[in-house]
Length: 239
Image (cartoon, rainbow, N blue to C red; front, side):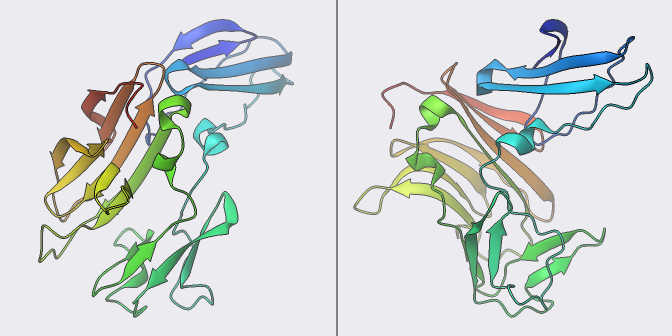
């Protein structure tokens, strides 16, 4: 990522999807400045205007990832007593909702808090969540780029071959076309109907997976807990 002040390059930093980095920028004179964050691989060019009133002024906190998000499902503040507990709205577009089914909304599943008082959604006993408002792999990720991030934990697994998460498109006959599946054994990625790779999954640990499509370099990158775990290439002809 390039960071520019008034179009002058001041630093180049490595960034990882899903990891929040904080930087301190010192400006030695008052006035209006243009601050730019540029990530060529993801076609991101975020520009902000900053007014500095004094030399040691506090600059605003800027999170560029929130600017470009199309979908964000956050469990923060959700409870089993809410009227809308059966739906999960996209923070970026409240008209788009995930549908929750077969929940008891007690300790065995539903909206709960972990040992660190962090809100989360627990799925068990046949409970399921379906979000069909957007189908990212049906768009043009090979042209526009794509980042999908999931934060989850698998525990008490009985059938390790049963899919826990599916983010896929299918052919008309039902066969997997493009996307990924998470089960108790692995994170498996498919492209054009073929398995590209598989990463071993662990249980009883919180996991954050990010799948990134970088069109400028024809690369796919998979991050596991903020670390690049797999890199693959694709062709422009891949569907």
